[in-house]
Image (cartoon, rainbow, N blue to C red; front, side, top):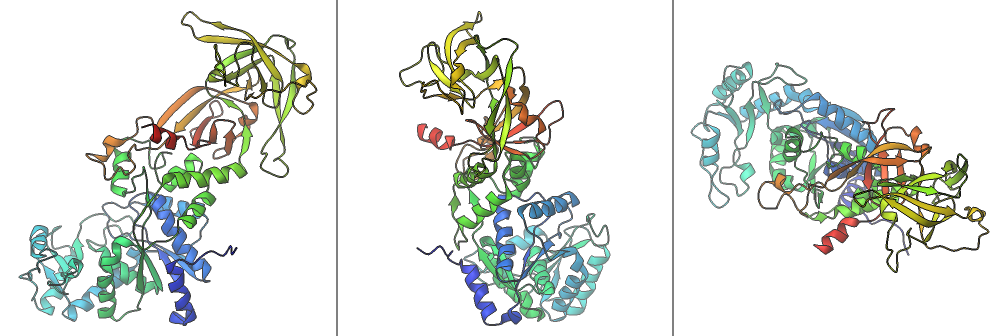
Length: 556
């Protein structure tokens, strides 16, 4: 059976262009984010695609910030975007900004005015919208459409000089008010915005619209393949019109279906609402679908790249199950994460026949998935241990293989113990479990001849330490929160974060550093959070060992 990966349609296009010597066989792509928010998981698909295409065909990729709207953009976002791309494992050839080209784009606009293909319009936004018509009815020409070239050049220069207020005038392309494509009905090219720009300061008070700036920036950089998401397909005729009329380098736009993920919102506007209205702790909250959120939650760049590769590149929109992304992080972490023992809801287990005051060092495999088991770690063992409260049952059912009166279990990497008694407080809550151990049942040298079906994890009460666990789950309850009735924030999962302050961890975890990833035996995958201090370690749950969400959905 062939293991060769099938090419996606974009790879086929690029391969054909290279084969035919188009642009001299050169491949140059670009990733053009607007610095108005943090990148999300949808952007990761675009990053992998643009950088991946260039790598496959020996080309290069530019990082270009589409900073044409000074009101929403910030250097904080620029820095976060750069960090995310590097973290995903990619490097750009050059970093550019649309603002680098403001003077050249302005001159392009003047060229179109001189050719009689652009004009200054005094109409209000509402008037322009009304004149646009509808998809079934042609639009109406603006009363300012036939201004002379000289008047338009003069007004446009005065717009740049700051003589007019925001919204008082715009520059429009003169295309076709009867076109069935609404984007060709004399689209806006420039608007007035008296706002401070994060790079150019107050030098400009007019800014190009995306549809005018994008293609021209591509052309200036001589981008060979401009890869966009599918919503820009209807913009392509305008992209090509501007390039043709300006007679500049013929960059070409291609579209692919963006990533839509279940139980996830990926609108920057909505994500900004979640941040500003304090539904989450910030852009890097581990429940957020931002790349920085996934990174903080413990996801690896390899798992995200593999996910993007496996879902493929489609021509039509579709919805991907977030469970698939979770599958890839489980698969990746299973291979790379050390196994450790952490007790989440502790109850004291006292081994009555273990010598009081004594202790010993046992040993556990760090990762049984690795050939060398990842080495061994020391596990201090003592008379008093912490075990999980739900690993004990007063009246065990028939198929219960954990601890209960008269039942035997193995303590992971340690001994077989048998429960002899237990104590409760006045409320009926169990406070202590007592047992005896079988000295000859030590893991690795068991001569007891006793077989048990249950194995429990534990932490030495004398040597373990308290830590905080943040148990993260999906942020939204409906499969498609953006399409659910009412405000999307009404559908936030109230159990998306549970903070546990009662957990005890084995001492090997004391040396954890921010971002270190572990498998907490029987509990899931966790990583050390950046909020940790020397006195208080905090671990984020990346994902459970199994897809418990699917089970809950079936119950509902």
